[in-house]
Image 1 (cartoon, rainbow, N blue to C red):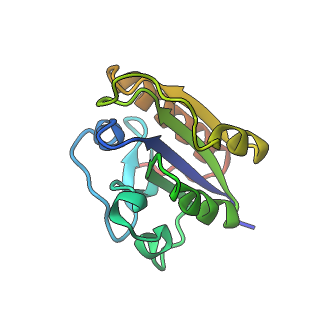
Image 2 (cartoon, helix red, strand yellow):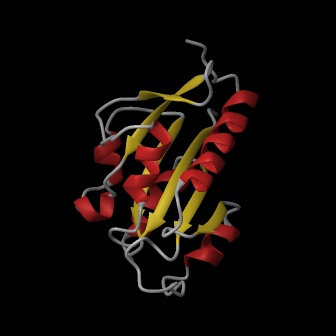
Length: 163
């Protein structure tokens, strides 16, 4: 079985999901139709598939966005609303390892939100990594944590490439 990784940014609308991806890539990025290179250092990169606009906001099943691609690493925005479980289940059924940043509060949120969807126990029960991050703060620290996690995960699996 091929190991796969999902890096998710979970949040309400206008909370900083796209800002996270733009900061990670160092430029404005959008969802594509195929994998792209993500630089992890001056000399190393990995292939990733980016879902920048959340499937929930698009009202599109994440499997249709990813389509026939079978990416080892997916970066995916996820909207904090009840149908996010469909996206989470897509990755769980395909045995992705999940590393999630929940932007709480999000950039446009008035205050921190309770987990009214009860996702935290679900993530922990499945062994997923969930970190709660402040979406109002400068994204550099949380993005560096994502980059470091990808680098370590990909490194032990021989997925790092050199330009």
